[in-house]
Image (cartoon, rainbow, N blue to C red):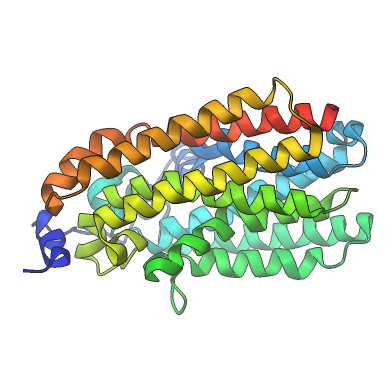
Length: 330
């Protein structure tokens, strides 16, 4: 039996999709489900993602407290809502076992309602992008936003289905979650792109993906049951955790060095360095713990450690925001 066959056998129960015909909902419940499918629990991390390039690129910090910048944040958040809703819609049956609350929200709203909400959100994003392109003169913003919406949807659906693209999931996830949204923010505000800022964006994206790969590994059984070939399944558990550790080490170092090069070393860099070091120690410890174990033993070791992933993502994100703020002030 191959390791992937073992993975498929970890979960012997198959997901039973909820009924496709939703029961009548109250207005309150409909709003609640609509908020749920937008994954608002990720809001603090999203704001950190947008704050980093804003602080390092804007030509005048006072612009960050303007109506223009508020619209930039609304557009960026709406892009992520579009991607999250598409993912919830596409994975509604996969989520029926381990993310029941999310599958319940999708089926509760109804598939047609979900498609309408996704379409309206996408149209709103393009309208805001047009307005911001007109205000800034950065007309490349329109194709950039349109491509982000398309590739963001393709992360979860065919024909591309980046989530099931093996090792290509790594750059795909970094692009959808970090690189493209951060580039959109930079092109939506008055400021300029530099090579050092580009290094921060690329490094931050790969660092975050390295951390999130632990969560991807945790989902191995349901991914195997539905034939989703994630980067972790393509690499194998031990090798995937080795790659994750390498991404955090190299990409995290790139972020630290680039931000210090932009603004010089300040005490504001300490939280960033500490957060990245903690994530590296924890994920490399996970790698050592799963090495040499079969899949079931490896996942049993990994799952309790995966609970720290949200903390690591948030601490590295906001630690980098603090470092970027000090660098901008310096």
